[in-house]
Length: 512
Ligand SMILES: Cc1cc2nc3c(=O)[nH]c(=O)nc-3n(C[C@H](O)[C@H](O)[C@H](O)COP(=O)(O)OP(=O)(O)OC[C@H]3O[C@@H](n4cnc5c(N)ncnc54)[C@H](O)[C@@H]3O)c2cc1C
Image 1: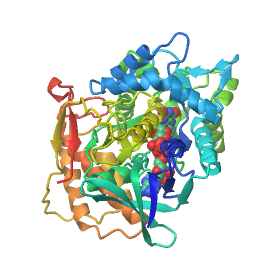
Image 2: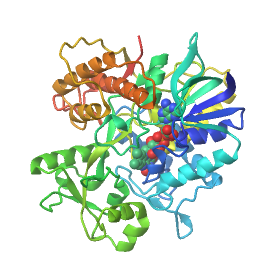
Image 3: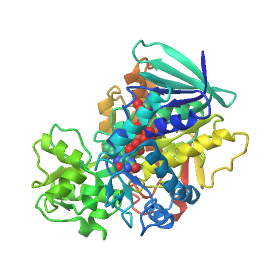
Image 4: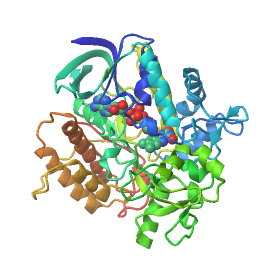
């Protein structure tokens, strides 16, 4: 059996960045289930938030993050993130990331719910692609051992301590155990839970499922962010139309061509994402359409082609010239706010297990993520994981959050349902646990998922492992959404439409 100081699972920004830092400390293995560049990171468009502008400050960034998080952000970790932002941006520059500039200064864009322009970007709307290419080139040239096509299927634990990871070689179908001192999960989100999603096919919640089964705590699963504006053309994938299009002045119109967002929110098109997504859902229901329109036709053509080159080219390829045509858009699942519970050093409750990136819940986002804070969160807390490993003998303070603990409820549904499959699961979650939820729909979905979970045979290959993980993640999401009898941030219950003070706490799940 092979032994490493550190094994990292996943090759998005979290996996690649931690691998580069961990390499300075000892031997590193990076395993990833597809090719090294299969990840969500490369699709990030808007950019990375950091208070580096002259009219900005970490305090202002802190306030915007807290306001968006709807009462559930962990203030201590938000403070760490905004304070350490400039240092991590400097690290990216040193690694060779070509941030866009304007008149010799780093260019900063405005996104919704940020009070000033503070989004750094690269290649216009190709920020994620530049991050992925820059970091993966560095990893490949640094001598880090990378295993592509290896799916992590189990965290190996002995007496409460992580010993390594079991991984399936997706080409041969054989399994191998890898031992390590520290295991870092960097497996990303779970957008594949939903019928409409901006996420790539790798986003199947594997890390949360593996960690939960191994005994790690999972928190905040009821909070899943929906992106308000995703291209809605028949037969075309739900391609993201970045917030920055609205930041640059793009406006939303309904089927009759009428601008409507100011009827729903004072910030109109720059309202937080949850407000935008619900408003668009209501407007679509009111007009009986499956989309609204994003209008960028009044912007100068050169702004569109230089600031959003990817979006412009993608739409053009599908017959839509966005410099003079309206863009049909709807909302889609975008970001998993919940995840494996970690402290401000990325540590889970299992000794030796860390989590970084979208798989982790650091407490930064609370009940709603401020746009472009996630890439920053990855950088700040990945760096802290490696710092923590260096001083591992020192005890860490526990979580400051107010929490209630649950294990997954046993359900005994009696009716028969169709056998589990990915598209049925995605439709179920979209219908019953999407932008607007209710007790009735959630309970129905919870029962179905419990039946599906029991009926699954032992997974043998990548698709069956991923389906089993998604069903478990779906259960965690729905049980948390049922428990939270209020509306807050991204979690909206039509039967409990207000936020309640007694729910200013976190729902944590542990395996029995
Ligand atoms: C379209 C889109 C646009 C976005 N735009 C922005 C933006 O502008 N700004 C911002 O801050 N955030 C943005 N986000 C969110 C942000 O990009 C992600 O949260 C972030 O990139 C996640 O990085 P990660 O490294 O945690 O996960 P990912 O980049 O998703 O990488 C996960 C990796 O883990 C691997 N993996 C998963 N499971 C296993 C397993 N069982 N075994 C082995 N390997 C596994 C995957 O193959 C992949 O390599 C966007 C997201 C999307 C989808």
